[in-house]
Amino acid sequence: MDISNFVKSEFKKYTEPEYKKFSSSLIPNIDNILGIRLPNLRKIAKIIAKNDWQTFLNDYEENFMEDTMLKGMVIAHLKEDYDSMASLVENFVPKINNWAVCDIFCGGLKFFKKDKIAALKFLYPYLKSQDEYELRFGVVSLLSHFICDDCIDEVLRILFNLKTEHYYAQMGIAWAVSICYIKYPDLTLNYLKDSTLDDFCHNKSISKIIESYRVSKEDKEKLKLLKRPRHTKRT
Figure 1 (cartoon, rainbow, N blue to C red):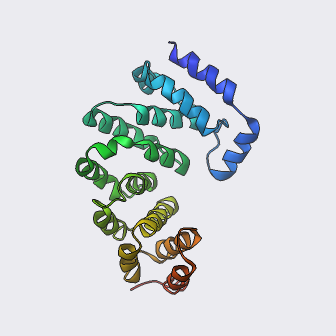
Figure 2 (spheres, rainbow, N blue to C red):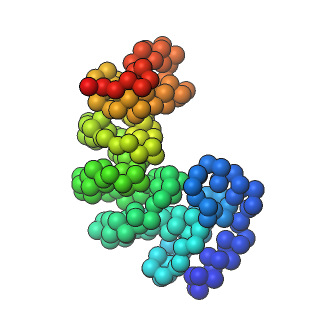
Figure 3 (tube, rainbow, N blue to C red):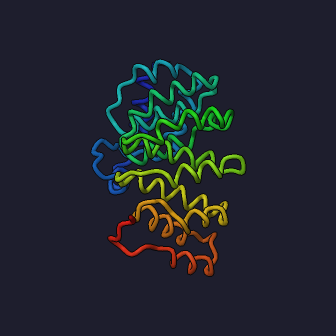
């Protein structure tokens, strides 16, 4: 298979100008979007993962956001050994420059579930990073694969000790806290009552929880009382 011609042909087939406009409105500051729907990208990724994926990952030039997203999807579809997968992920993370590529990539990384102890160790440097999307990668990986009985205590400890002023990293933290609450309300509520999150992450976490249809009206009213006044800094 000529991987380059295959991808270009598939992209030409699936590109939608109207979807490009829609995607561009959701992903600010990114001007190289083609407009290809995720199910179609996943179809292409599955085919590449079963063929010469090494050439695609190493040599295929990334001109569009979909090129980068496709490489992430291909990696997620692979079934290599843990160390090989970790190396591929490590090489891909610096390519992430928007929330969409980050979140689609993280959600597909099922290999993390093979060895959660090793996977958490792998994520720790990203969770300490000052880079906006490295940190979001770590946080979204946590919420995608580690909010479970075995890991919830560690996940909550990590989330409530994160400090960042980067918007998309903060939004990732709030999203993760909301999922923790939905799955483990009592444990998460204890953290929220004595929250060490900055005001934005704290209030945004509560807002996201309140938006969920899986939270009762009674609990939503109680959570509203935990919100901090705007523009107030904790000492």
